Length: 251
Image (cartoon, rainbow, N blue to C red; front, side, top):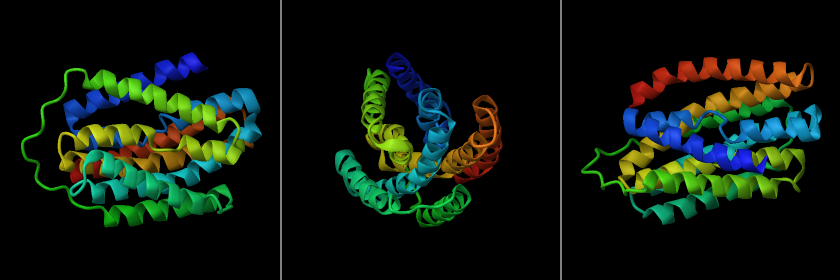
């Protein structure tokens, strides 16, 4: 499992980074709406802890989207005026505060999904418009490799801590914006406008993750793990395809 995490995290963040270079930061952010971190973690929770544990963890991941989206908004509002590390710390502080509040909420999966959908819609309405980009800073020679190494370290650390937290908190922590932070910071070093575009794309894409967790949590209590993940992936794919229209329009 450790080897899988060490390999998977760099590969995923590398592919998303390359997509951002080809199609722009908005598309890279939109791709992060896929459950690239939580999805594999939930697979291992099913294998190690059973379907009931993983179903509860999926509800935690679903509610974890609320502080995740709060991070994207706070970083986007901060980055035109603050440096990358200041924006990151402010964003993480906002994430932590919202997470502490959301952890007190206990809802059935359907109501949790409704709450997340309303939260994402509200945050998108509050999102700042990116300023016109000036000349972007030159990319560092080893930037892509640095992103991949940081991604592996963050995912291994977070999943290691999550083991002792129980199903809800484990699922919740799997939605920590690790990849989002990496992509926001490296794009912020290019320009604040690029960071805002990435973060707006992430927020639009989070409807995909929410749908994945909704279907997975519901299906795991009724059918096999293989069929549950298949249904969740198909549902998420439909939502992700539909959201691409709005991402392109925004770009």
